[in-house]
Image (cartoon, rainbow, N blue to C red):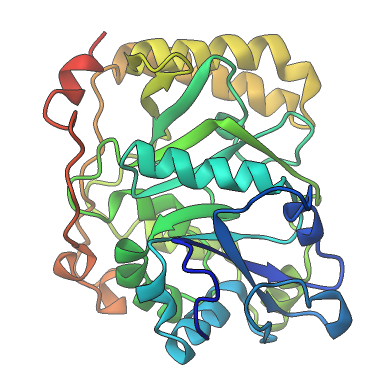
Amino acid sequence: MANPSNKKFLVIGRVGDKSLHKHWLEPASTERNWDLVLNSYGKDQTRVQDGDLPTVFDPGTKWDSIVRQFKAHPELLEQYTHVMLPDDDLLMTAGDINRMFEVVVENGLTMAQPSLTYESYISWPILLHVPGFKLRYCNFLESMACVIDVRYLKSLLPMFEKHYTGWGTDMIWTMLMRDPPFRAAIIDEVQMTHTRPLYSGPIYNTFVDMHVDPRDEVRKLTESFANYPNSIVTYGGVLANGRTVGGRRTMLANVSYLVRNAHRSRLWSSCLVTASELLARSITMNNYRPEQLKPVAGSAFDRLGITAADLQFDREPRPSEISLPERLAI
């Protein structure tokens, strides 16, 4: 599966018969900085022939199917520097995806996701868009549309293969890497809309058939670490004008916008709860920095056989990396 364009970025869309991926290619006049390959679980093969690379047909779950795709085509991990892994119920444009990759590279991020519009079906209000920010550093990113540096993605593939439901991996993956501060962010400069009601996709029927309880999967993974923080925190950010700000200002901006716009969300009560939690954390966790998670011996994660050494990779430091924590203490 050769790179047809010599582009650095790849989008692997896990898509079905009702996929919205055609919107990702609009407007057609956009010069994309990324290639698209579709990984399809659908039955109608005529709907999934829009990729730049040949379509992959795999009826499995998202994560084990992607692992199989990389095993069959390991050259993809060498030909591209960053991969986006979006679900098929997301509305975004070709320009949005272009900018996602650009912001990730410009800011030396290992992982990132677009912010969510207030029209979205959401699980985590902290991911909703906050105006005035380019990005917010966060210790949590959802799995629906993450952009990942391929060097880190390689180290995560064994986890995806062994923990194929994927549930709970997004609660820990920003903190499995060595030195995780300022490496994962919500990109407010780019927004996407999640269009499908929660827990309603075909994958949930698959979990029922497999007698898998996703919530139990989450609990087992998060309880696997002695230092799991149990709090989702935006601990700093970069404003639209390029200025860096610290955890307190970032969290208070989050609080303000959630309170003033909760009525626009489908989960308005959750928005208010999240706002109250962030208000408290702006005091108690103002200086918080994520640290690499430490597995407990015999835990669910430990039994996957993945070590801290497996999750390390060489990366180039950003020019501002040494001074960044001090600059963020504003």
